[in-house]
Length: 314
Image (cartoon, rainbow, N blue to C red; front, top):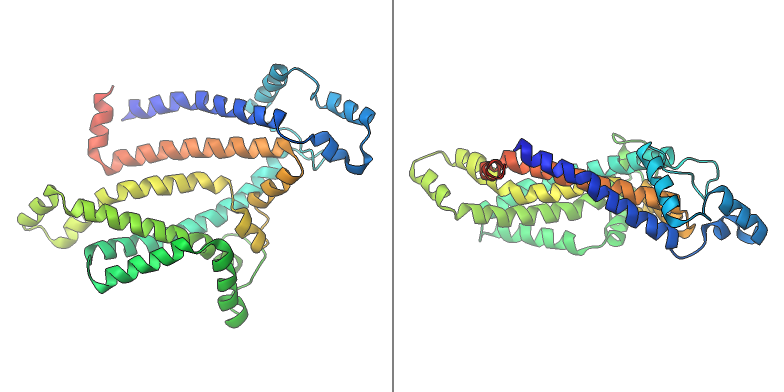
């Protein structure tokens, strides 16, 4: 298992190198001139050429990429075009931490509600409870954010007056409840339906019938054999959700006035602020790579067969 993880880690730098090249290429040849956007109505060709020279934008592509890669390896993600004199790294990390807290709260809601609902629906297959849970999950999977958000605001903020409609005061404040619900409810539906399907598949396996034939308690069978094996596909979804913590959710953040990285990315796209766009893309790619490695490690703990296959591949 350790050698399997080591092989994945060895490939990580090469993958990130390819991502960095693609990101830099898109940033260099993307639509719009960031210098012209920066100058706005004060656009002057002579001043624009001077700014390009100062920022090194008039150098050959590979020279610029080598300089960019060297700075990234030192932790320097450049300087924002939209906010002159503002380094990209502290600007992004502050926003990403806010979005990550919101994503963690939404993921916690999705797991806390989706796991028991999915398991309950599978164990009560064909009953009214199974039908009700499936209908509930279909409802929240089909509703877009711009419908669920106003509905929750109308109920919990305007009618009941128990939750604020906007603002940000951290992970453990009441202002995070509504946006976390908006982001977490679709995840609840996905996890519940996925766990239901996976559990039904596991319940039909021979080792479950053997365990019941041996007279093992039903709760022990469900906990040790059913749930553990049924969680494998759910781990994939949760792992990829961990990778999305760095990208934010610009619709939810805009609706609830949350100063996260989603709003920053949207503003940067309109402003052609390529250093911020490239930095966000690179960090998100690194997050997904790390999340996939964590998923592979979790697979090994959940399913001993994966550990054996990994050991056989040494």
